[in-house]
Image 1 (tube, rainbow, N blue to C red):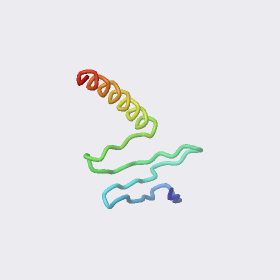
Image 2: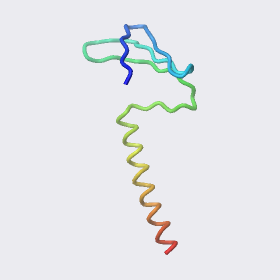
Image 3: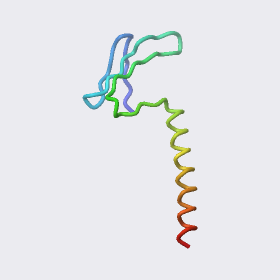
Length: 71
């Protein structure tokens, strides 16, 4: 993991087309802004993990149904 220090108003750039900017700092909360192309999905990690888990469950159910149809 790369660790960087940024102050309010400072940014970092990822892959030449994603900019992450520190918008505000209040106590232990940091507000960030992400400027990325529309085709690049951006999720909070907890939402991303929920999506992955949901996809795994759907794949497992679909795979089992497909196998039952084959046999």
